[in-house]
Image (cartoon, rainbow, N blue to C red; front, side, top):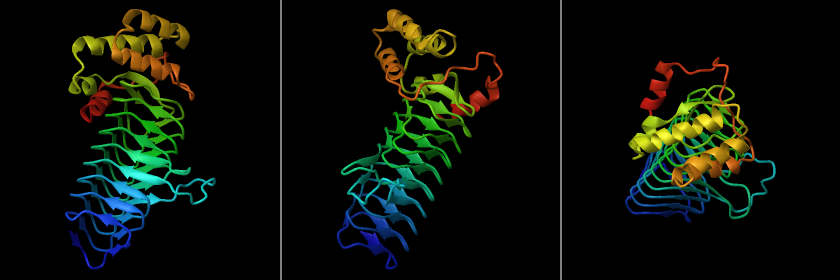
Length: 277
């Protein structure tokens, strides 16, 4: 264990032998930091935080701060960070609201500078938040999603796996799996074909998902009828079952495409987004 003499470590903190803690870093009570982690100068692990293996916490990041929730009564709640995450400068991850509740970040995630996770957020594995992404409380993000820089998301929404959202977008509604989204408010502009290919979805699967998106999000067909058609054609595929269940269980609603074409994304913008996944 390497701890700089200016760091402040609470006596109750559980820190693995191989952890490195830099100048003026702070590790508070009720914290667990697993092997291979590094806290850069001025990083703060405030309290009630469990950090997995091989996590980098960059300067100015604050994990385990109290939730920005007027209903919070200083109950015991947690932040959990999965293995192999990269948390860059000035990221904030707030504790959950509710006794025993958890704000959770999955394995292999990258949270770029100034991004914020509100209380009770749930991130899957290998999620990327670009610079200054802002997630309100109780937002759920599926595996392998990519959220572009400066994008903002309302509390209690869900973002499906392998969704990609362009920088500067904003959403008050759920964002379905496998899609490419843009604008304020956000709308679907295509499917994340490159991200799916990189994750092992074959050409037939990608084409089926694209056609399902056309029916659900790029036509005036009501969701109820669109779901029936999609299930009838491809309902035996697990990824279609996932998409259908996501749409059917939405409480915040899902945006449809701009059928007028006024919000169509340029080819250059699509290429830039896809290159990031």
